[in-house]
Image (cartoon, rainbow, N blue to C red; front, side, top):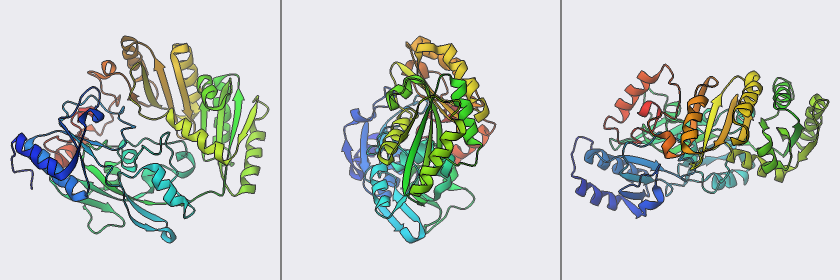
Amino acid sequence: MTGTTRLAPGVAMERLAELGAPHDPRAYRVDGLEPLVALAPETPEAVAEALAVCAAAGLVVIPWGGGRQMGLGNLPERYDVALDVRSLSAITHYEPDDLTIAVQAGRSIASLSSELAAHGQMLPIEAADPERVTIGGLVATGIGCPRRFGYGSLRDLIIGITVALPDGTLARGGGIVVKNVSGYDMMRLHFGALGSLGVIIQANFKVLPAPEAQRTLLLSFRESDQSAAAALTLRTSQLAPTALVVLAPPVAKRLADLERWVLAARCEGPEGAVERQVERLRASVETASGESVVLDDRKTLAFWSSVQGELEATPFDRELRVRIGELPSRLGELATRLERRYGSALRSLVLDSGSGLAYATVSGEPVELRAFWGELRELGRHATLLGAPIEVKAGEDVFGRHPEGIPVMRRLKETFDPERILNRGRFIAHL
């Protein structure tokens, strides 16, 4: 079926029911909207055909994985069909000796990590709920994790991608593929695009050897500027931690049972080397720090999974979460400013010193939160609203200040999704 064939909505609904097992639409609400129908196609071809049917009938689609990151995105202009891709969860190609893997979008992070761990390998990604978060969701949202400092972005590890387009075709780009779409860097095009240009079917990655050992050094400080300065010292040293974050006292209390500002440094590698690295890291800032704690392998994994829960794009009713990009050298100043302005309303603050990102979660009534977003969006080099009540998001662009490339992005949307059936209005500039 092509997008030029027009279908009556009733006929389209009948055809969609044939293409995927129907699910309860109430489980797929997005910002208060419930779809007319929810379905879960079981093959890539069925996903592509479903998109073609929706395009022909003018039905608006929101792709769905685990639903963990659905706080990210502007309010949908319309929502007719939830397209659940979790049935597409196979590993279609894995060559451990070549350090490459191809995995369908619906596979959970927990399942993928378990398969890789059996071969002593990994993708350096984290999830607060790895059983629920899918690989397609991570690619579509572009939500990163602090290990980006040591290993680079997940985007840097993608070597190929398969995407279902609204015209009913399956487009492929990069490595471990049969057919490429020339003229576009497909991996970068769809990473973080929120499924607004196509539904991610499969992603191919280069994987890494898993570390023999992991430790996390926690150093406590009385003031935010002290912890941020210590993080900057470690960031610019030769000691090479794989992640560096600063936790405000409320987060440090929840995650590590420590009362002050806490600098967390993750160390990965051979057992002996990791032990020496921890001691050298501690020695480099020990004169300024108070209490120090070292987490072993098991506690390290649990700790960073919990940290990730403070960074994800979670829907909120009485809070908002903002990701602010700033120079690492200015994160301490930003933290002080946020602490003074919002006081006890600042429920969570995590400074990803390795990546130059601050994640702030602020509580309040909707009217207050709307004013807070107006302030927060002007901070740093860029700011994104990761989650907020509907009343806060209404009439706003959650992606904050627009980059200069918006006209190019509009042309890409017109090229790949001329009928605007994918995530209509949810991406940057309400594309």
